[in-house]
Length: 321
Image 1 (cartoon, rainbow, N blue to C red):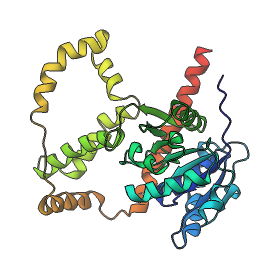
Image 2: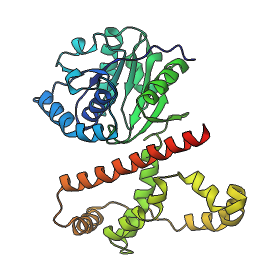
Image 3: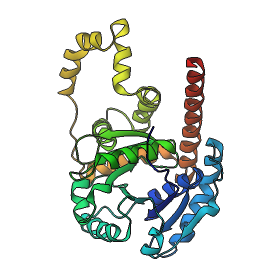
C-alpha cells in the first residue's frame, strides 16, 4: 500500500488553453483548485472555459463533491501557492521564464509539494536548474490536448528528479483517471508529439506531392489505422498482425518489406509554396464549417469513445472477478 498523502489542493499556473483544461479536470475530480495568471481578463476566460467543459465532464462522471465553486482565482503567485500540494505549471515555453518561475516556486512551496510542468518540449533537467533548493520535486507531467478529455500524461524526470517524485506524480495522475507513460530518457517533444511529428511529415509529403487531398489523407487515417489506434497501440496491433504467431511471425514476414518501404518516405520542406498548397487543401476539406463546429464534432466522438472504453474496461473487470 502506498504511503503517499492524497493530494486535495492543486495550484494551476497559467490559464490558457492547457491550464484552463487542467483546471476543469481537477475540479471534476473533486479537487480544490487555486488558479493564477497575470493576463488581462484571465479569470473571466477561465471560468467561461470551465462552464463550457462541465457538461462533458458530467457526462463522463464527476467525483463526489466536484463543483466549479471549488475554483479560486488570484493574480498573486504567493497567494495561489498557499496550501498547494501539487502545482501544474503551464507557463510560456521559454526556458528563461520557467527557470525564473521555478526559483520562485522553490522558495514559496514546502519541500514535499510536487511541481509538475505541462511543457511539451523543454527538458526538465534544464527547467529544474532554477529550483536550487529542491529540484528533486520537479517533473514533467505533459498532457495531451485537451487535458480534461484526453487521458494521456507523459511523465519525464530531469537529472535531479527523485524516483519518489515520479512515483507520487504517477499515483496522482492515475487517481484522477489519467493514463500515464513513464519516459526514461529526455527527448525533444517527449514521445507522443514525436509520434505525431513523424506521421505529419509523411502526411504533408503526400499532400504536397499531389498523391491525395487533405480530405482523403484524413479519411485514410481516421477510418483506417487511426480507428484501430483508438483501441490498441502500434506494438499490440503488430502482435495481432502476426496472426497466431504474434509479433515473432510479424517480424519474420514483414521486417524486410517494412524497412524497404521506409526508404521511400518523404521529407518535405515547408516552404511558403508548400504551406499554401497544404492550407488550400485543408480549407477545401473544412468548407463552411467553423472551428467551434469542428471542435464540437471532435469532442462528441471522443467522449463516445471514452465512454465505450470505460464500459469495456468495466465489463472485463467483471468477467475477471
